Length: 247
Image 1: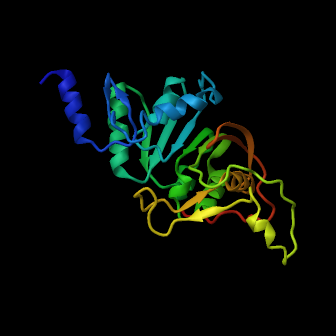
Image 2 (image 1 turned 180 degrees about the vertical axis):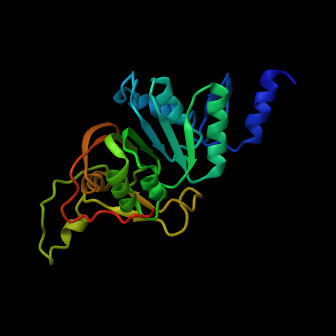
Image 3 (image 1 turned 90 degrees about the vertical axis):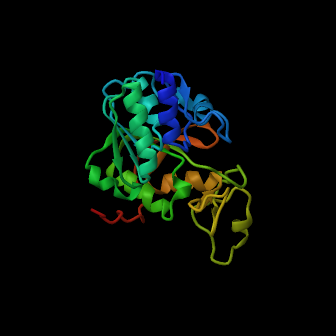
């Protein structure tokens, strides 16, 4: 068996892959139902991340097979840590980084455990995770409290209207019409499955994404692609209590 055939065999043995990586000329998921994912998504907002991340620390939450972790290393990031709660994805990520020759630290960890890292990062990637969580606002509070030291690149699937209504700070108890207003923040709860995935729980509209980020203490700096935001660590809502320690 030649080198390429051996690599193809190893990649197949680690399947199925959700990230279509290119490992020494071999694609891991060339028939992905979304296309060349996540490369085609990254192409729409990669300009929001500095070309040179030299000296920056990066945390990739829900790293899957490591596509974004590898991209950060390609931009000269210093320490890159990828965490995921699925050991199958971490095996893929470790294999890909080893084959490509990148030094990335991978940990089996959920977003609810980020306090254990005891470190704030210059850049946190929180891509495609929020709607898989039973407790999405708690997750954002934990990120703000423990690991986001500077900026966070955030992406979340959105459904419903894309409008964002200009809302007042307060409404009368008997004013129920606001909840039907187009552009009011909404979270759609999925009791069973969406797209065949039982881990799709809360799917927000655009207004809800932005409201949740602000409520958790993040300042929105850019929205380079409909589902993607670059945010900075700011001041949490005055009524938001610090998240509980899970360590």
